Amino acid sequence: MRMVKLTPKASEDLENIWHYGWQHFGEIQADRYINHLSEIFSIMSANNIGTPRLELGEYIYALPFERHI
Image (cartoon, rainbow, N blue to C red):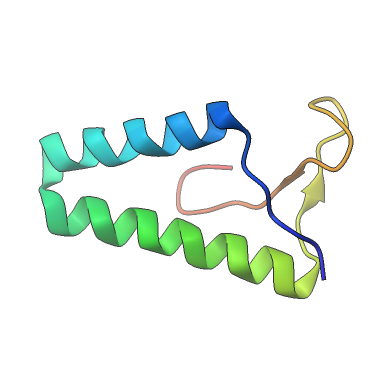
């Protein structure tokens, strides 16, 4: 099992994503979106899936989520 660890910048990005969602779509939708991202992180960890992104650094993996990577 791979461990998902967010950098401080990634955590900040998630906070900004939530804030944007809250402003444009409301609290329920913002929470739903962030919760879904958390589920994706869990799935990646439990199943060792994701595409290595060596250009970003060692042990960095990506998985498409809705319209994002």
